[in-house]
Amino acid sequence: MARVDDVALFSAFDEETPWDPSTPEKNLLRALLVTAMADVRKTGIIRKKALEYFLDVDDEQVFSFRTVCSYLNIDPQSVLVAVHLADENAQAKRKVA
Image 1 (cartoon, rainbow, N blue to C red):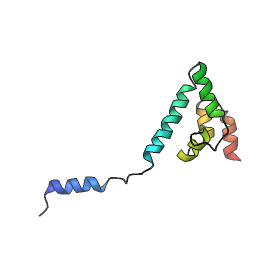
Image 2: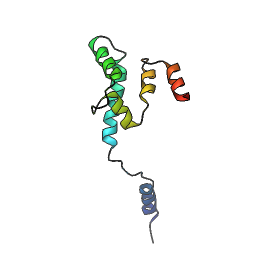
Image 3: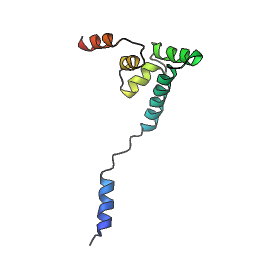
Image 4: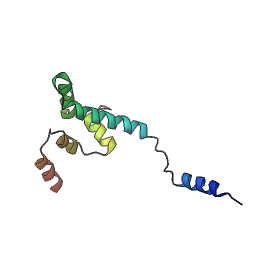
């Protein structure tokens, strides 16, 4: 006969979600975006580099803004609106069209 403790332990493992092997990479890319978003609020060369990162249209480089957004399934325009580099009205018009 199974002990109650064994059953509880088994049910705890039953609720576990499978591990996604891409999680570490996604966490790295999220950290990259969050850091760039914080850097836009700073001044000097740090802000300049963050603006270059967000406004670069390159989508060929592995860590380019558009590539990172694509990999994370994030709309780049939404991020640009969040950091005040794009107009919310332009984003709304784009969604309607």
